[in-house]
Length: 207
Image 1 (cartoon, helix red, strand yellow):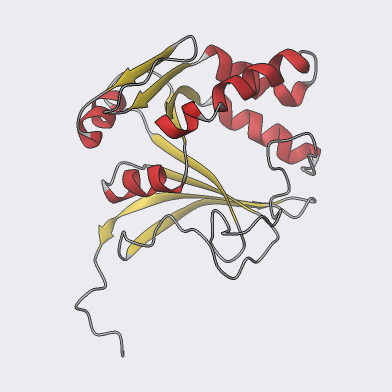
Image 2: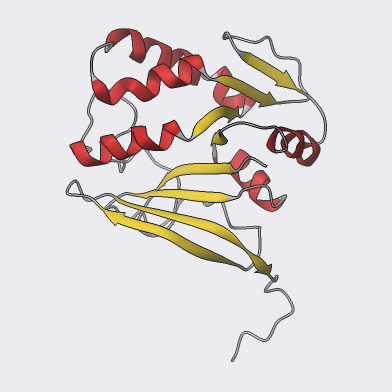
């Protein structure tokens, strides 16, 4: 069975986004990239594990795929942008129950229950599945227990407030697979979901 891998940039205090316009990410997917060379190499190595992308409808409509197609065309000889070419070539699955026209090649829209759709995708043979979407999409996958591996790109920034992906999912334990610090200030932490999970509601929190 294939793994579902959720990769997200987060702040040092656990937020995936801010309510303001503060620029807190070392790389916000634009031209100003402050990642170091080692981090760039490891990021591409991660994509070698991925054979399919699970994408939110919102991300599709906002031009995520077109953005990376353009990047692959703009930087055809730069080693770092090998991942952009991989995104272009890989199959993409978009769970949605709303009418949406596929905007890219190798992109399939799938309707139905999220748990069933993703479960069927994971049961197929092949490389692992990478997840790209906003906080709401990530939170829904977490709540359904569909994420097998979390990859957090922890930026050296504290937001104090913002958007979380675990807010409604209750208490859970994660098993650390790897943690690596980079010269740019980024720390990449990989976790797998622990089978032990309990909701904190109703428990004695005074202990």
